[in-house]
Image (cartoon, rainbow, N blue to C red; front, side, top):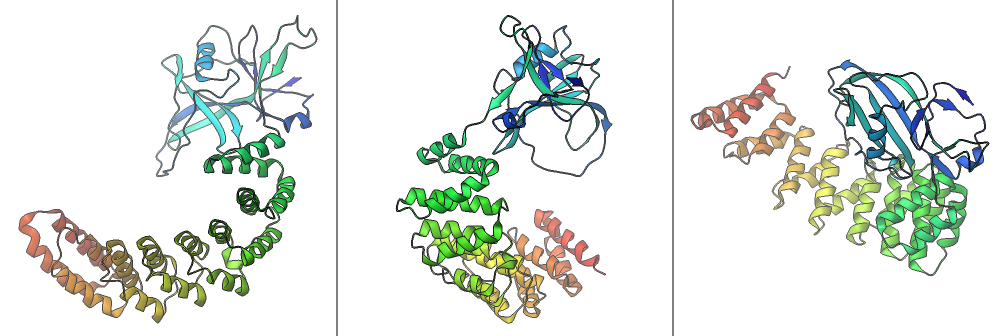
Amino acid sequence: MACKLSLSIKICIENNRLIFCSCVDEEENPEKDKLVDYYTWYLTKYLGSRESSIRGKIMMPKKDLGNGINLKNILHQLNSEINCFDFEYAPSEGDCLQVEIPHAIERFRYFKVLFINNKWKQGSNPVFASVTEEIASGRIKRSISKDLNPSQTTVWVTSAKNSIETLFDKLFTDSSEETHWNYITELVQREPQICLHKAASLVSSNVLKEKIIGIKLFIKLYYSKYDTERILKILFHLLKSEQENEIISLLISVMDIDNKNLTDNQIDLLCTFKNHNANIKFSLMNAFSELATEKTIDVYIELSNDKNIGIKQTAIYNLAEVIETDTDEIRKALWDKVLDTDQKTRSYAILGLAKRKDEKIKDFLIHKLESIDHSGTLILEAIETLNDKSLIPFIENQIEKHKVYASHLHKWLLETLDTLKSVK
């Protein structure tokens, strides 16, 4: 075994302890790697802070990754007098150690510990605002008694993967929608060819649950970009004769991927489902997202008059904000909703017309501005979107009218005035 820094991780355990190893195992077995996951670690040095405007969601850490690799054990050993690494290392303030294990659904699960005030504790440096450099990385091994195996003193710490057969068994017996997709995700990641054959068999089943699982396997394969052209043809072939609303909705929901490559015939087929149930209508609008053809726009316009408020809102939002195309038909559909009883629908319609610089929306906004109150942020947002400096005198009149109240409305009016004045 040649020891050197690597991107893999060993945790060697001597005297029933974990030691972080940066070794490379010359006897690694690729076949074994298909059956197990290895625990990995990354040790970084804190160099300082930096300004950052980056924002994002951080995956939540876990406390226990299984097989004895948990926060409590790691902290106990790091804070002991025994060296836990296979190289010379003295921790410095701000050093951070991340331990992780691959996970089919979450990509990986992990926890981090931080060296602070001469002690390792749970925590990490700010992700987006820290300057760091890697010290070392590796995998995890565990020591074993020489009495049990005189020729071997350490073994990898691994987590056994479920067999493909076990995953399919769980898929058919578990009734949870979330875990269904979890099993399907892992199956497709590990054995896409097997999943393709299984899906082809299941979609012919007379048992609805089995048929749905087959459809989901096809969908996941398509999302994973596995033989996409072939699978897309299969999905449309199934859609032509399908009668179950749940399956129709599933099939249509995947069409948003590369929807700009849909053929005219495929779009025609999708449009035939515009009068089905609410779930199918939502799936259809999702499939047509940012797809501005004459037929898809007609579907949005028709659905903008749907009795279901959510469908109506979604259709108007797409016409107003998502689709860049500007036609008389779109503007008419938006004008039909500027006085709608639903506030969100009104908002989307007004903003969509302002975005298109519709000549009549200016007079509409001036009229609404005369009676503006604390609920009038939409009107001001539309005025800023229209970006017409000729509206400045009307804004100034309202500022004068509301200045004695020193209210939020007065502040918003001033901000809108500044926006308009900055227009070149």
